[in-house]
Length: 327
Image (cartoon, rainbow, N blue to C red; front, side, top):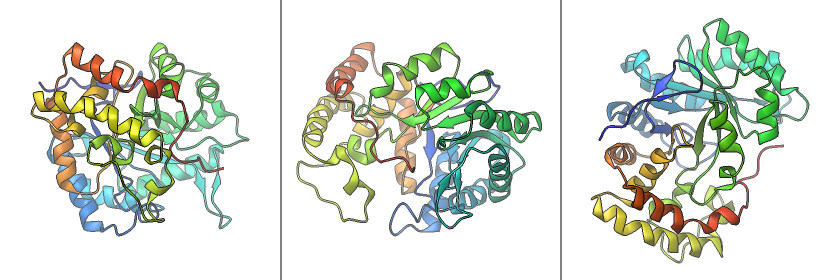
């Protein structure tokens, strides 16, 4: 089965329910030992294998990810895929400051367009909320850019439900991106139902929980201090053992579909009615090609429910995000 296309919010932006997160494409400030060539290859592999949403951000390599994504997509028809990027980080003082100032966001969009070497963005997200800008004013700046044809859909990332409501005062918000996975289910109770009621798409990031939901981890594991996973509670007890136990219940379903655990988990997200597009990241082209095969996996209602039940304990153990938001 090939999945139907997904429409983003109330716009005419359409894309596949499986996208590609590119924080490991040029995100040298996030991961050790990244090679530009690998990043270019994995973006091309995604577009070659039917993945149509590319999700990047200024803060991935401070513009370098956007530059690499811009290079990689040069060989493809620009209208054949959906391009999303994000901004809110102001480094003009030498320190990172989060800003939703309308003029600053406008400059950020222009800078992203240059780095990506394109004349429009399909989705632009305010990457993090700041503490001072009225949210509807920040969104208003993006609405003006939409009217100029520079962006097609307006997004928010890492906004609380109250902040989303404030930002959507004029009904301009089309899509919200936030952490969500079978291990981080806090948003199922309030944020995701609100979005569905208001025709706002939801795009979860970290859907594979930094690789934990791929099924590749054993009971004992340690990470070097410069590895992002060393800071994440999912890899610490008791969450780690509970996650491994739940993943073991996915394995027979994966085997029945001749699929991997990763492909089966991604298929679960694509069948969740509250999720629009799921955007797993990758470090190698081969991972992207394997992830793309999840588009061919269709779970039965009983299988979907079995996986849902296996991770039900994580609905009540809300521990927020894997990593702290920048202040």
